[in-house]
Image (cartoon, rainbow, N blue to C red; front, side):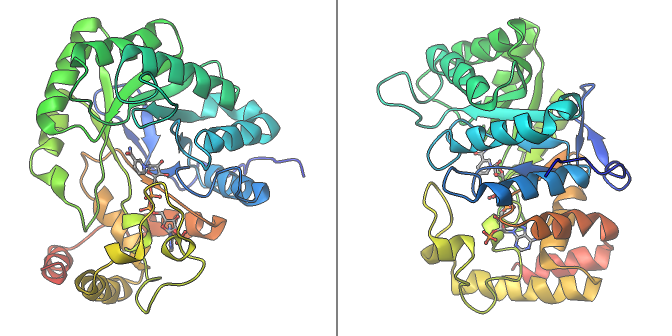
Length: 331
Ligand code: NDP
């Protein structure tokens, strides 16, 4: 099968400017943390990526350790790129990251320049790319001077291996320091990638305001709480769900889903039905209602989930009363 992108791919998607940069991102991006390893059926991976691009999702989020095995998702994506998407490279924003354990020894983890530069070179080889659009430091490293980690990101941009740089899961205070160091080096911090959902609100305390003040974009992960904020776990654990499959590598497990969470999710599900949308759609629309959010990275195990999630844009606005009812459901 030869892939031809849908001519209508830009008709429905909304694109938001990322902080003060010139780059616009789709409000829905696709992440390849799970379901794109070398053990996942290649045609399924391919269909999910095609469906996403046909819906106007121009941004694909990867990391060195996504798989299984680590590196597997970048290899899968590299194959799809080569086979189907090479003609569309200039329509794509591809990101990768390093910061979690990747290879044995002292140079395959955390935030040293040695690790980050070597890891990006490996990611480029696996994906068959000359450059990534965004490269992230994946998590803060308290033992490496922030100046060293940020100068590694700056070097990637100066050597043309990355166009923009970002950080993930840094606190507001760490973000200010990182942004200031990068500013001094002449490579602005483009974006921050935090966890954010109806069930995890930590960024509301101070990070969102910090990002706005610094002109940095925000792209959230696990905004469906790995699937909990959908209707699939309301009556037990389906076998073909992320929990049911027991994926490992940070995937949610049964013991992390409490009865209290399911009670809240049931109330949220009733509210989403009253709005005429799926709980997944309401959860994504809720994250995107804040204009400081540039994009939400969704995960998907099936192409149909991408289509369902993108339709959150059909009913994106909330009344004050709906927002009040959502807060009450979460108490
Ligand atoms: P989500 O919270 O979006 O969870 C995705 C899972 O939810 C899917 O695999 C699927 O699970 C289920 N799902 C998705 N859409 C629907 C739908 N419409 N209806 C029903 N079920 C649905 O995101 P992830 O936790 O997967 O994270 C998304 C991305 O964020 C990652 O791929 C990665 O790129 C990034 N990320 C970044 C991190 C970081 O540290 N920077 C950490 C984690 C993620 P099922 O298998 O049950 O069908």
